Length: 278
Image 1 (cartoon, rainbow, N blue to C red):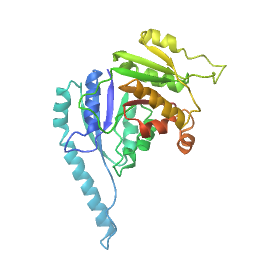
Image 2: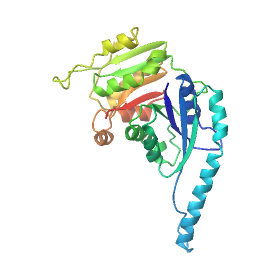
Image 3: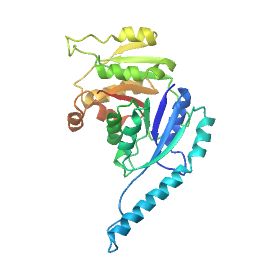
Image 4: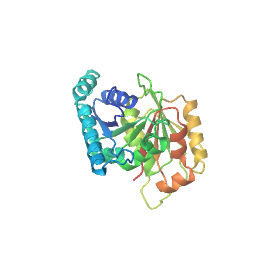
């Protein structure tokens, strides 16, 4: 059973991320927690009493949270009808990343749908990547045109022999085990830490998905070229999901220089399952 976490962008309808999270929760025989975060801020400066402005802003936040909380029964009924166990609809005020990070410890998976047209920085592809890093949760990143029915029949796994790749593969086990076809793109090069144990891909697959196919792929330099090659191979295989580790190098360095994660987040047109390497 998996506990799925998603940020609800709206309260007047179930947005694409919430609908997808409910599907995944039902698919994995798990629960879904949707949290709506009311932003906290002050109105534009005016000649009025600043204290009154603060009070007015606090009242508006309270009003929005009250309206949000009123949607809980409808969400519970809707999610339960899809097969979700014990759904939860929560509200809070402040910063979305802080709220998701606070809830991450009691969940197994974060679902996110980037929105390039949003003014919220956490909705951008880079923001979603940062949420994956900040929460530490495996993150299912879905394209903007989320289909009404999610299918993960063909799953492709990016493998380079690193702990991050192993963590991503392990996090993707529920999808790997349910898929019709699993293909591992193996770009492992030299062992980075020869004094440490070897992570045995074949042994893991023998335990969890013995019929998985392993195909070699040029590893490249670990930058945008590698990301482009990985996406090209994944599209060629018509994959429904790409499982990969995120931020193989120091996160700030990778965002400054490009990197596989950044390229894939910016250019992927298929669902991704990312796992940040701690």
